[in-house]
Amino acid sequence: MSKRCELTGKSPLKGHNVSHSNNKTKRKFLPNLKKVSFKSDILKKNIRLNVTNSALRTVDFKGGLDKFLKKAKNKNLSKKAKKIKISIIARA
Image (cartoon, rainbow, N blue to C red; front, side, top):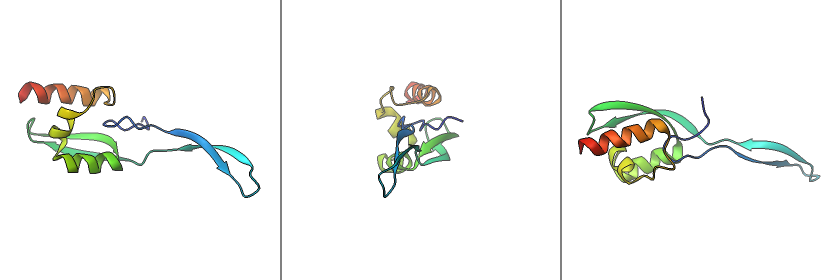
């Protein structure tokens, strides 16, 4: 399973743990991913995606998965999300 958001493209970042004595050790900052089932009104089916918590909040704010994907840029979307976007635009 990829540690990448399928809607926003957020992926792990690299950085350091810094101790009190200023020793630096490598670490990863992982995105807050969740497996979520979205209901598509246009396609009339549930779609399961691996998304970050912030993307989930954005989808709710925009008014659902269909409206979010219509306005989303293709460079941020995963292959699965791009296919869903194409099918939504074709039906609408």
